[in-house]
Length: 291
Image 1 (cartoon, rainbow, N blue to C red):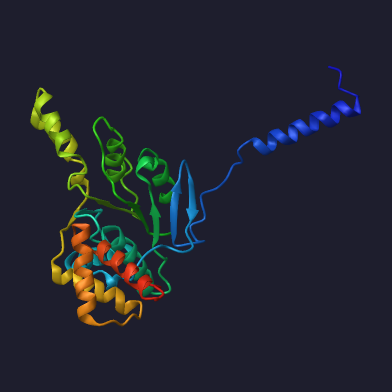
Image 2 (cartoon, rainbow, N blue to C red):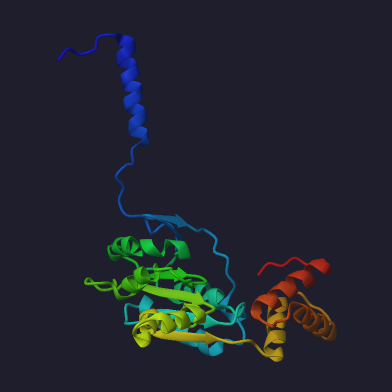
């Protein structure tokens, strides 16, 4: 076969070849987990480092003492290489479910011995659940204990991606990697809407089996930690805690009156509402809020 001899043609072919090389995906090894302690999963196999995590100190989370202590103990055991359970944090909105996961991760890393590998936190978005098996394969080879965290996890009617999560939590034939644990938050205890389970029960030939198929997902979590609406005293304690952490001093009766009025206008008392009030209070009174 005759080779092209035209210099312009040869140069053009080389430019085309170079362009194709740049467009082609390059072979890459596993993501480097040592660069940060927190990442966001970017399917199919990417991890985006998060240098500055949006979180509050665990001591500022009031009214959830029992759940805090249980999750801290579970996470400490996991980080130390001991058996631990997947955890589902469910219940009232704004009561610190996702904040607790991030605060526990920071606490465990801050108190661990220098010789122990740091605990990694990877946030997995709800829409990326189907990609979990591939992520598990990568993490199985990693030298770090890793928490997979999915915030506000729930499934709607005709959504079958919950089956991928069930397989990931159980690990299939290989089993879940010893260095991986899954924490999820949800407003639903069984991750599925009640109407969905009722519809399954009313239309199935064997209603109990249809419901069992859906409910069995939450059974994959060894820890169920419930979060309930807080009392007025807990709400005011949250407000005082945030103000103290920000170094803001104010007349107690004024803070109490305005905080209760704020909660009334929002129709709820929660940690989120307390923090939003403190943000507003600090701004109106000319204070910086660095918590």
